[in-house]
Length: 346
Image (cartoon, rainbow, N blue to C red; front, top):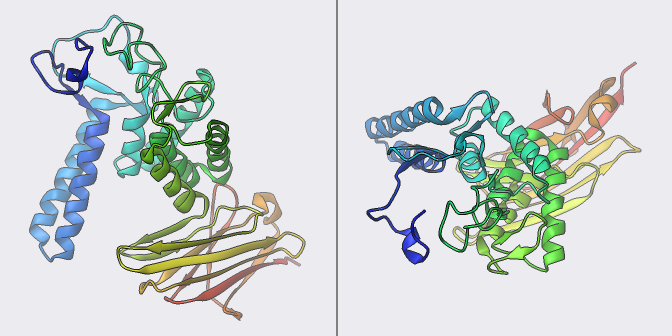
């Protein structure tokens, strides 16, 4: 707030310390990850310690920063006597809230409320995408640095797909295919109009800063792979959950770290009432296939499903989904094909 040059990013005598949602979420993620790593190493007592610390941070963050009436976390609380002449509690901070989701710190109920708040703020402030990082921004003159002394520039209310991509991923997972696809296409149209992925954009979507920002690229690739194509690989195995709707699609991923790959082809035939997915991978763990029925909720109300694995009838379950029923099939490792056919009830 006092520095107008590069000193603004370093702690010093004029630093105003805060406890903020973004850092609590990062610590929560780190503590959980360390706990998982220690468990894999057989160090149960040490793992339990870090798991307890992660849970403690979550409880404290809820108590100090979660705003039940607004449905999102505060940007921060001050640890000094600093006061502003405006209400910081109304500001929706994209970075902290989306990190709380991505780090698993926010509960499912909190995730839904954060996503609703993000979409409402986009509409309220006329942002071209959901990537607005601080809405409303700080008033003119709060910061001295020329990068963010005015509202709606840089981190003071600009659009950052670095964070917006993570929020779109959460929309695919928790808000449904429709909301996720709409938000992703808005960002895609902006990137095409700008002929690149910029560091940040103004409210109308005009590119600013670096014209080839790897943070945006990495975040959006993850959103496309894990959100739109629904291909997620972890220690527990392969999870394939296409969110392509009635589209045909295919994806092939190669992992340089271990030399493995995962790929699938998906198609839906509405006339035949059939969805098909053929996948292949050298991942050694089992795979979970989850096919959200593309025809929607109403089309499947009077239907039953016949599910085949490699051409033979197989066990499956039907889970409720935001966009309609989800057919889940567990398979072993290796190439397989799953088809789902509707059968009209008598």
